[in-house]
Length: 346
Image 1 (cartoon, rainbow, N blue to C red):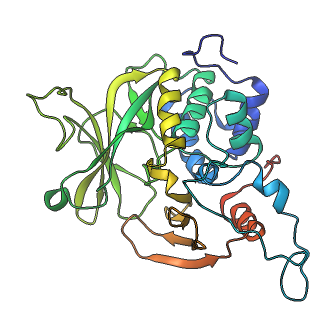
Image 2 (image 1 turned 180 degrees about the vertical axis):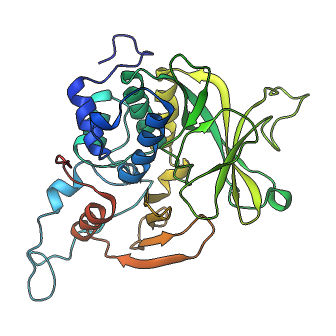
């Protein structure tokens, strides 16, 4: 537990080992607190821990109470009843929720082998980095809802400050990097140095990332109340650069995160309350994604779709429709996204 509510708590040596195991890494692969080590940690985080909003739609421990109920009668029913449906209903209140309690977050993501979204993923990653002697600050960002469109024709549509990123400094070095392992819209596989207009390659075919130091496009102006330049993360795809999100310079406190996370995880109008998404980066740069939606009343069975995309604008491939029952859903999460109690990978 934190003695100071705005202070990071370092991980214990055992927790570091468990965390690295979750990332399919060992201490021997991290010889120093360096740029190369930071890149490896960042990449493996995206390869092994999914972006995962299931906690915002499903009850606590739903898989523990339903995963073993496979006994069916001759009509394909369980104990005379139809299989229990996976309801994705943002208007109901019996969802598990996302909390930033350090013990709960560590157990959920590292021990239980699940995922999370920006607030618990990036905050937990920050704790690992400070334990490894990196200097880290928490940075809030607005997300561009038109991020996959050409800004010259579509402009920008910005969310409130509902995204968390990290600024990470290498010890004994002036170099500072943007790290983000919790962006559901597909972020850079590698940290991006805080230098404007320097494109970097990523794993994903046809994509590059860069930073632009500017006012938030189509939102701020020199004469308005907001006029501080900050870092816009831009992605190159389909022949143009498109803003993904705009990261502000003033660091957030842990208490700030509690407020932002409360809105994102409880408000029915929040973005991820209306649909479920689980997504993970693959070694070839593609993304494997599961999505599910329903109407606000929750009266229709939702379609749970599993698919792969080569990049953010490519066609879906390897598409499957998943049965909306707990058993099949849990098996899919284990097989496709690495859910389940973590064993030593070495």
